[in-house]
Length: 79
Image (cartoon, rainbow, N blue to C red; front, side):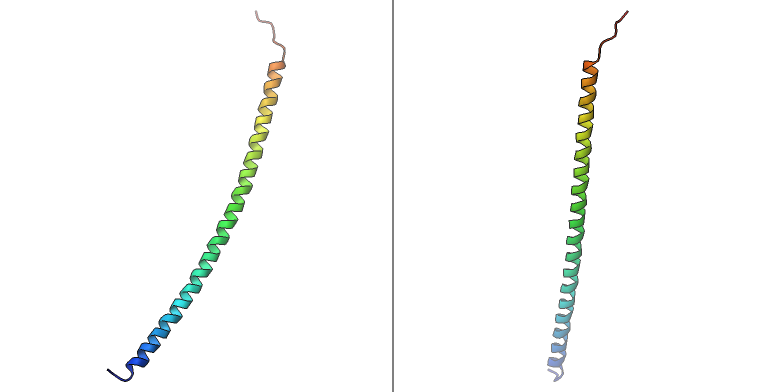
């Protein structure tokens, strides 16, 4: 075995350790970004859902009000 081989091996292992550490940090930042985006989308979906529910309730109220008006209206005479 060559004398420089253990030094070279140690340098390679150190380099791999640094690469793994950097990769781990990039993955952590990526996960954090995905979690933030997911949270923002979830909040937006909740607002959209609330707005849609409000619109449906208003529509149902309008239809019920119109139904009562038509039911209560006097009938015209037919020929």
